[in-house]
Amino acid sequence: MDQRSAGVRDIARHAGVSPATVSRALRDGTPVSAGTRERVRRAAASLGYSVPVRALTVAVLARFPGRWFFAEAIGGVERVLSAAGHATQLHNVGDPVARAHFFTTLPVRGRVDGLIVVASAIDDDERVALDALGIPVVAVGGAMPGRRRIGIDDRAGARAAVRHLVGLGHTGVALVSFDPDEACGRATTRDRRAGWADALTEAGLEPGPVCEAGSDVEAGAAAAGELLSLPRRPTAVFAMSDELGVGVLGTLRRAGVRVPGQVSVIGFDGHEMAPVADLTTIAQPVRRQGELAAEALLALLAGDEPESVELPTRLVVRGTTAPPSH
Image (tube, rainbow, N blue to C red; front, side, top):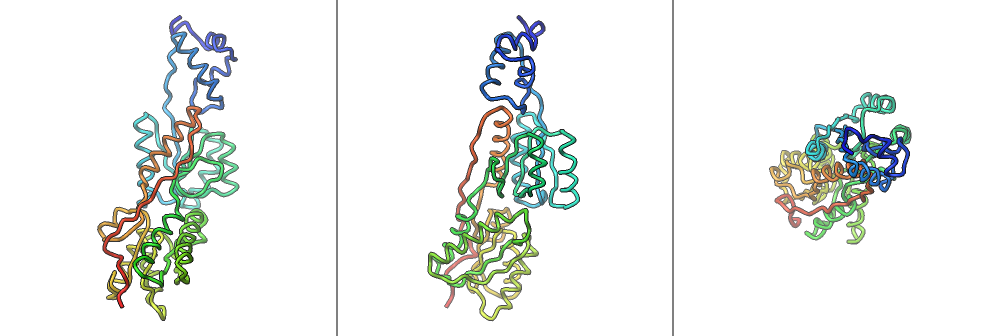
């Protein structure tokens, strides 16, 4: 029987399922068990029915799509999806109005087959909206309980950063933190702060000063100004991101503070600016996280059950950290 004469009913009889199940099984992203989908597709193949490959549309949610971390992750997602012939639909959910519009209109539009959420936590109402869609969701970084997550151990990475400083002999390690009240990044902020505290506690050291900033270079520059105004200046700074770290470096250098002679600085992420600034950092494979997230989503749409993945970080020592001067 060739493709022109074989139809859904023929495949249904051959596979021992209903025609409706055949229709669902031949479409990616529909609720059919992996075993049933495979049985239907084998039946279709045996009857000479060529299953058309449908181009999928995947929505990618990101708070700051123009920032380096988000752009790198999105680039990884897009590379995998484009290679497979699928489309990427980018949504900026950092803007409150755009975010509200996305979550109120998505359930009725039905225009996407799956979602990838990049370092953006989802609140209860938004989770209900996503659950109502019945489509796969994969997270890059952040925290989305019950969903596949591709990311790193932020706490362990921060712990490694501060251990590096402590190992050099620093005892007053300050923290330049993301804004803890920025809900979308709360999990990352919490974990990196915990790692900072872990390393100090295990070394028997008191926590240093904490400056709660934003997440960009300007916020890091302002935080360094706060540190310089303290009665006792710390000898080392752990910045929760390389962008914050670059801002800290700029302020210290403009103030005539020798780095690393008087203050050592370490960042986090492996940002493209870190080598230019000669910034010591904890590097993470951001683009690879995006690639793995896209692969996991495609696997879910194909009826597979991929595992969450935690990728390693690594310490990259450059010229902004050294033993404290005496």
